[in-house]
View 1 (cartoon, rainbow, N blue to C red):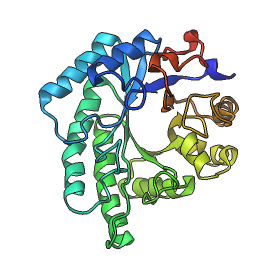
View 2: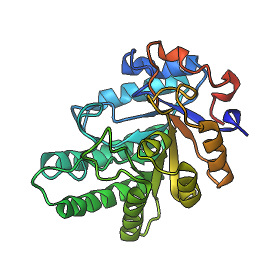
View 3: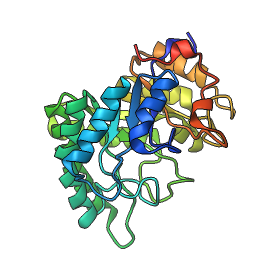
Length: 279
């Protein structure tokens, strides 16, 4: 057990960001990783030109890396936004325009997990109106994901850093997962269990793992405080990942942490090189 027993991937939207997007897959490969994930890379548009999608696919292929997770369009992220699907008007329309684009790109690179960030509460808009819109859009996203053999992920964030985001606990995200699965009958909506976010919310991580491992489709980690690499904070991440495995989770663990004041390539000293390649 322990870190060498896990299946890791690197989030190229928070690590290796000192490099242009198309150079990051090769940098991750040079550090020993073969699996990567991404937030939606084109924050200005849900529908980038096909040539840009093709260029990213080529960069992934040339590096020998496998994209295992991709966010749908989520607004300005990094930035003030936390998703678009529950935001009425233009942002919801942009999310809908992105659904098939993201699903088709995922299919083209063999990516089988699509993450749909819920979106912030909007001042002056009834939360129930936002939640109804969110369910409509998540149902569309779940169907598109199912079409390409993927799961739909729903993520809980943390209230201190995302005060307007409504899903700031594991039970809140699980409730949405269950609602989407009930609406579609597909069963492909899953929980994205991010140990950093849940710890920031003060949740009992061991209890969350016991309660929701069976509904978890992906895991992400960073240490707390600081959102740095494992070992830079006080979270018992190695033990928690063992607990997840014991609870039946067999999926990947996304490294979604900040490298600190050093190049990203130097931020993996906690993980033996022999344990970095996907398997």
